[in-house]
Every structure is written in C-alpha cells, then in structure tokens.
Length: 271
Image 1 (cartoon, rainbow, N blue to C red):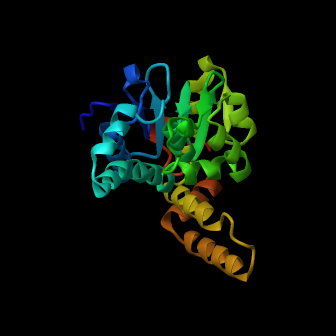
Image 2 (image 1 turned 180 degrees about the vertical axis):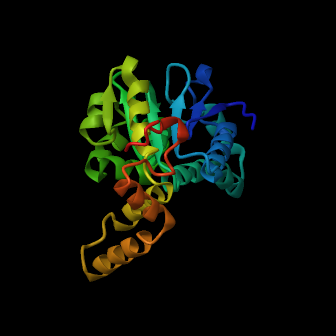
Image 3 (image 1 turned 90 degrees about the vertical axis):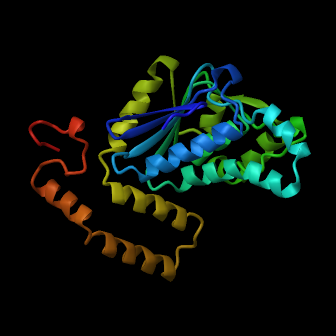
C-alpha cells in the first residue's frame, strides 16, 4: 500500500509505522489519520505481524493536530465535523484494542494528539530528549479524544495539572509519573526498542492477545467471586489451546516454540 503521510515496513514480524510529515513535525491531519487507521488495520490482519511500532520521522514524534486542518472545522456542519474528528478516535481505539502488542518510539516532542498516540500504545519508550505537552487549552481547545488513554497512562490526579496548565514537561517527568515505561539516551533508543521487541515476539500470538484482553477486563474490577471464577475459566480454556500445548511441549523438549520467528531461532533449537 502506498501512503503519502506515513511509511510502513515489515521486518522480522514487526510492523513499523513511521509518521512522515517531518516538515510539519508530523502534525495530524485527516489524510494522516486515515492512513494510520489503514496501516494499523492491515498490521492487525496480517498473520506475519507480531507487534506494531509507531515512530516519527524528523525532529518530532508528533506535534499534535495540524491547526490548518482544525481551522476547517468551523465551516463544517455538526455531523460532518463529528465524522472529520472521529477518525482519530478510531485510530486511538484501534491501537489500544489491537490484539497485537503496540509500542511507541518517542524521540522528540509529543504534543496533544501525539501524546494520545503514545498513551494508546501498550508500551512507550522515549529518548531523554523527548518533550510532552497537553497544549489544547492554550488554543481554546480540549484534549477530548485522547483523554481516556492519557488518563489511564498517567492517572487522574496528575492529568489535572498537565491538562489544565498546558505546560511542557520533559521525558524524566513523563517517566516519573508513569506515562513512559523507560528512558534511554538518543543514540540507544533503537537498540532499546529492538531489545524489547525481541521479548514480545517470543510470546505466543494468541496468548499476547488474550493477555491484552485480560488487562482491559480486570483493570479496576473488585477482586470478588466473579473475578475468581472469570480468571479460572480463562486459563482453563486457554491451556487446552494448540498454542499453549505447543508452548508446554517446547518447554519440556528444551526447544523454541513454533511461533518464534525463524530469524530469531537458536540454530541448536535451545530455549
């Protein structure tokens, strides 16, 4: 598929999606959002893809919404406006609910909608040079579509400050409040991303999908009889699957499971 605002690659089971409007600091417009949605959907449907990485070309990860695009909303009828903005909501949800692990590689500014993309991914790794900002209120806007994901990523109490002040904060603060999983010097960012991907592709594809669903379903639920019964039923079902039986057999036979990408397999077959 040919795109104009993003680039895609598939390497060793990893779909790499690059935001590629470097002259606009990868600002989101309707074209980029549509292309992102298509690329994520294709990655989810491709059996060769084991994980999805979101990254940015140029000096920024993503500067948020393209204000030229946002300005056009004033001339739209209400229903047209909802369709126009709904694309980003769909992309964020697709990343969040993807059955395959998603990872954000953040190397520069991630502002507004860019923070939403980071928060919607399962794992966020950043360069120490990354910067973050929920700048919407300073433009008379609100961080509406990204709010469910950012709130989950940093928590309500911390979000109150950053949503309301529109301050820029650095990668160290983003890590401190739990928005990022890890920080690394800029020159080591790709190595860190690759190391983590090396772990992700060793997991059973169905198990990874089930685990993502488990996290969504269990987060915030009280630990009661219903949760005990639900979790027992899930593992009872999963352990009878072909994938689980292959994983258990591989453990006892001291070999790698069949789902491990060929390029990453130990020639001797060891675990």
